Image (cartoon, rainbow, N blue to C red):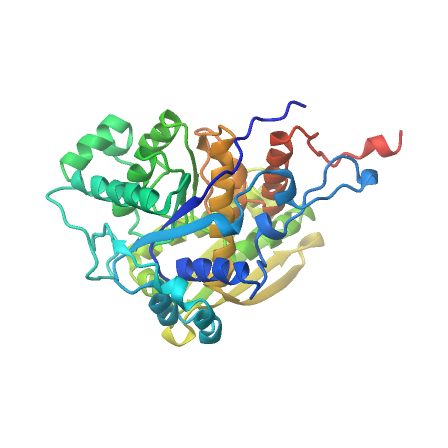
Length: 436
């Protein structure tokens, strides 16, 4: 198999983060701590993951970072935008995810990262407001301000390349409109202050216009419209999203494939969450919750395929609840009650209680996406990167396709893409060659 031409990971990579709250500061602090040998990059495929090459009998399972040219953590620079003007040390202390003892060991580096004023409109995130916000006569001016920030950062830090990851809040529920159908229509929508263009889409546009790959970590309609996909293809840039797959949905994409593999019926799946961080506060607004609900609820339909298995999943009652509960902070708790149907229609139950840490689960995703998007760009890949669906609740996909949600199929797709890049045989797990 022919090896792909991948440009080397020379120089420094700038990682632009939209929203310097709990997720972003946990990511930044984590990378700084790992650099100093204070912690391990647990949960990161790019840092700890291995990949099998060739037959099982060959015993070749190097680390992913040994077979594809990923940027070294020492060569990453962070920057970002936020509606609050706290530096990253202050923001991390406010978020309360990481212990002060760890943060104090990297305090100077965190304090040096101060947020640029953000593009923000409270119409799209109703439960938040802050003073560190850009102003402009209309929306046409806002991407120009973001692009100026990006250019200044690249020049000041001597960066070779950049990527952008949305780590901001969930916006109100939106569907595609006329302004989303083409690049020309979108630019006219900016000029006319079209309310169908939310803040997140302005960041997407600014990134792509500056030649920066983009990842969407929220369920917002930011890159997942024809105009942005067309722009990414025109600019020869990879885009990916949406909504980081962290807590309860991560568990669903592990459990549901197992139930389907054994052809066990599911009569009902009740999911409830309690969450006390800023994300929980935002989702306390019904319009933002609707966006998240759509992202979370679609998972089971695509995995279980009720149209193919009507007797097993055709009458599934799927309920999702998120409750804002401030005492928990970033420590999220997810409860799942699953009503199962077994042999001869006999009922069973499965109950799952996942006590997790939202930003601890999200931080390695942010790092992996930054490094894999940079790799994709250097490999000449552009448009939707479905091989990175592994990281998302509601993966972007080509028109006419259904998204793949099964975590294990997603991981196989990711690793086979890496094998394809380096000219190794794809692994099908057929295994007949061992018995011929």
